[in-house]
Amino acid sequence: MSGITAAMVKELRDTTGAGMMDCKAALKETDGDMEAAVDWLRKKGLSKAAKKAGRTATEGLVAVGLEANAKGETGVLVEVNSETDFVARNDLFQKMVDDIAQTAISVGGDLGKLRAEKFAGSSKSVDEHIAEMVGKIGENMSLRRSEGITVDEGAVASYIHGQVTDGAGKIGVLVGLKSSGDKAVLKAVGKQVAMHVAAARPLAARIEDLDPTIVEREKNVLAEQARASGKPEAIIDKMVEGRLRKFYEESVLLEQVFVIDGETKVGKVIENAAKDAGAPVEFVGFARLELGDGVEKSADED
Image (cartoon, helix red, strand yellow):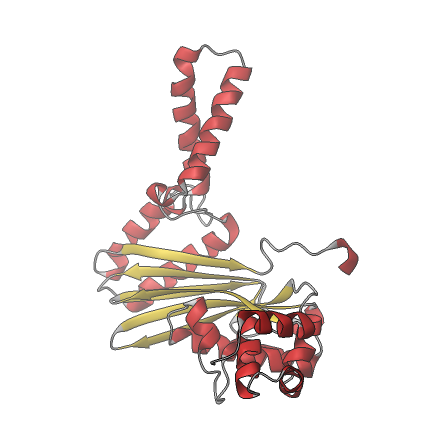
């Protein structure tokens, strides 16, 4: 790519709206000829796709992929966004999302690797294939998130809430359980815990996994509340400690009360599963993706 400067890449990107890597590739393929590079992007549908990329894609699907082999079990979740729910119910879009989820298994749900991975039955990357689909379907689409869980021994269970098509819907959850026990039992317990995660939206699996900034912010809020009630400083710390325990019970998965029975902590539910599984059961982790979570749609797109 000798002779192709960052300024040239920026100029092409500003002109076409295409991605930086696509612009680099276009300039490389055309020996730095700007007009030819624009045509190269147009021919591949990348420039056309870019024109739609400014529109917020908050609909779409969250899909799950699962695979078991001699090395253990891997589960992945992917979120692929579209602009409208209509497209999310399009067979072509659904097939693409499922293919992306299956591809994600090979990279363990790593988003960066998944973007560059070859799309199923194609010589193009996942990102390149999505860009082509934008041109075909006529809506902005994007691969937003991907997560994965792998267990060497045990099971990865999944749950899809608001299912639109087989293995894809509005919320996807994975739960990993490590055990040498009965796989069927592990899958059943794991799915129940996954259903709990979908409903209860835990912030972390364990207290020590919570983001320290979230804990500190909660402490500050609780302390100010105690002061506002006129409590003396001498007992504020104890009040905060007690209220923080309640925060943990509401926000940490293994401390939460299981929504299915309304009385047992999730951590105890997993521990008790050892009896039916025939071996101790260890919680590995969970992943939860909710469609469009954290994405705001601009007012002029309503």
